[in-house]
Length: 314
Image (cartoon, rainbow, N blue to C red; front, side):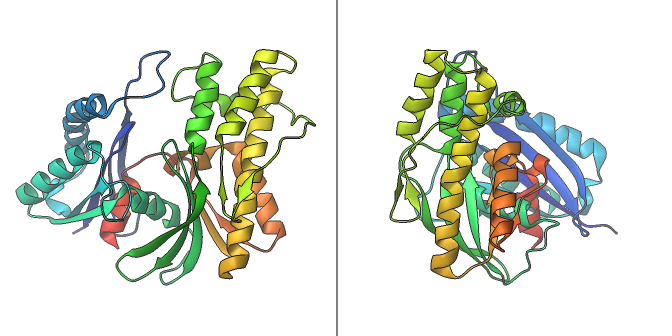
């Protein structure tokens, strides 16, 4: 009998449910991106909670039509943003409640993880990182820009924040620039495609690194909004330059952390990790420094339930 492992993630902008089998094959993966009205820069928590409540029954029904739910051994959820005391967001309570109820109805084991652990799980799934490895992880998404020192134990991760942004997250920066351009929120995917036909501008953009692994991004937001309003450069060139500058920021803090902690493995996770220009920049530059860089499959960079399911299987 095939055993299944189910994961639920109800993040700030996506309702996700996934099931993997004993061989880490993804047998079900369904996500519903929450709706944000045109021109808005995000959702309030109560708006997101309401959409998750409506979305999860649809995902559960689709899953039950695809697999034999009596074979589900473990049901896991993301119950908090990070694996630290006091980490809390209302949206995660929706998935937590549904996962707990389903575990009781199906007589399955119930487990909780953080949203961040789910991203790390999706990142190491089908990658060459082994249990027991110590590695640097860069979590870059709409709500998070954190540089992490991760120690992988048998049953869980020990995660220490060692760097990142001191103000905006990289995802916030990208979306604010995108909304300024009149694009629909979230803007990252469309901006990524536009930047593919752009060239990096030969302009001097200061990179302000503090204490080797920390930086600020609000100044860069103002700088690029100024470039857009100026109308002196092609849009695709401005966006290519934006992503190149972001990649330069995070490359520098990764290098500094690898030197400081004597580590040569880096896992890049979160929605921004799917950006083609940023990803290729980091792969090329880090490999040039003999640092192994790991990325999830592109479809697993954004919020998903697969990583949570994998964490429950571990």
